[in-house]
Length: 131
Length: 334
Image (cartoon, rainbow over the protein chains, first blue to last red):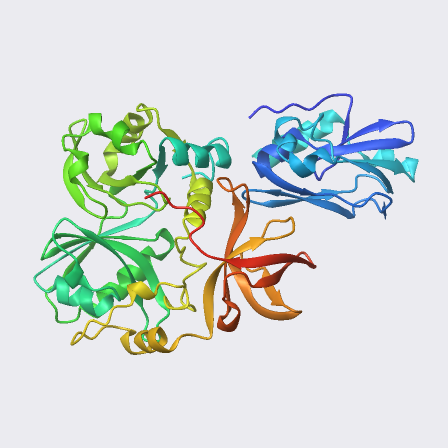
């Protein structure tokens, strides 16, 4: 399989992508993760204003065949969630890096950014998981 | 068979609108022959073989003495002394053993052809039109649950008008070496390949039982709403008869119901069902219905709560989501 992994993004070992803009981060599920889940039919996102620790569970992504977790890539406060996913959860499949974004958070510990992984490392991870 | 070829939803929609091909070669296939086959099966099966005739198939369960289910299956009467049985993949060895153990002195021989035969299901509203040019029989002459031996592109096949999708369609069995040839011939008609994922969403919409979910070695057919399968068979003894007929006339403590959610969410097997905070049962199968575009499910609940329209709650990851008991099937077009 070939997947799309934009080089300007950072990644997590739990298959989230992270777009850092100043002290904010937009988070979604990678192309690989959406392929693994298959048709997404329901996305449960956190409430705006919630303050969550890095690696805690922020939401659930339900596909026809399975359920996956949305994991906080960084500690922070949830500033915005993608309301469109309520009526159009399939955006997670069709547009994982654009229309399928899940939440924007205000980063509370900028030093945690160094713990995210680069696109090269993420590609290696996917390769090893596929074997 | 893979879970999906491309997308479960697309494959599901293809079967509902056109036709899909499922590789069901993982299932089991036995041949039983001998002059005592019918009396033997009458003793093992809960359905009544007097309702069967040559060239016809019948859905049934074989049960333990306590009424719970060894397996659900389809058998086909080739002749009074030759039957073909198709069983669930996960139960092949158990079923073969169960049948063999009960033959005793009877004139019945059982052979396991599971790994020597290939099996495909060809299902969907266009399945007749698409299949007809490939076979040397008039498909309109094969009624529901009947079968014929015929040729598909000159390959001998067993062709039955049966299925597990809630659509019209066929199930086909043949020499395993011809699998690829038949698979390709069916796909060349314009039908789509469909995987295990779509097979499950389709059967759930049609509310067909799945072994290990709605029926199992801890659930009886009466509890699973398969009352119609439990036949009186006067003057014929069969395994489980006493308790099943009692359950059929007196009812059971729990019963299978259809489920919808009033709030958003997806329900899955084993999620707990509550009424006013008290646990009343659990989900046996649940998921997203591509046809109805909402969550559907089946569950076993205490019988006093089985009325359609009863509001319930289902626990999803610690949260209690509002749901409602509904009638089944959710969708059928056969």
